[in-house]
Length: 325
Image (cartoon, rainbow, N blue to C red):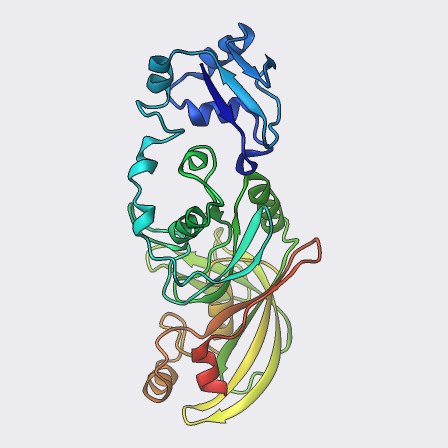
């Protein structure tokens, strides 16, 4: 017999889904049959499989050790045996800065140059750094990762810095998923753009993705069936003259949230973000790099306000301060 203890990361998960995670090689039909026969119990009572789990619930599985090993993928560990070989202990998470945290979610200040989620097998991104960080703090265990893996919930481009929202538990994943899907969370960015920005207010356009070029195009009207409407609120915080020319510090509030939305729309409005290699002004970018060493788009996810009133803020990074003082 094996007894599994449910921790907070899996609270809210259905019993059958939990069993699917810890015994991934066992067909659901077999698990339901064993539940009916009372060979799988929840808190030593008969269960149907549809029950929602609470932290500290106990699940009794009356299988032999050999059967447990067979259905768990040939490993004594929970879930995917590859977790034991994942090498999280070798991941450098020293650049993890926590801006906000509760029992279910964590907000991290992502530096520029780090991917939010890996784009290749075995790659190291903020997602892997997050797990290594939580393992080091004993907030999660290798065992619990077989049931639920903490994860980045909103992505920033590699060279965009600032707030990334992450789930620590299933409850947190559901909360953030709903916040992002329903756009209940207000997300504010700050950026340095070319010229004197005088286009405050909500700007509405259409965005069309060019998959081949990994870019988007902005237009006043839809240009194809793939065109989607976008809207962003802008406010000029300050305009200043620099050695690289006139620039403005602009605050942007996402009303919709499409890939490259702020970068491409500002370029379309005639105020590309300084340092942006895709949508920026080549001359400004060269001057910004020569004078200030700027080597990325100066776009920063500055503030998030969740629907429950929680306010999460990030300071402007050093490359911004170097330009605006």
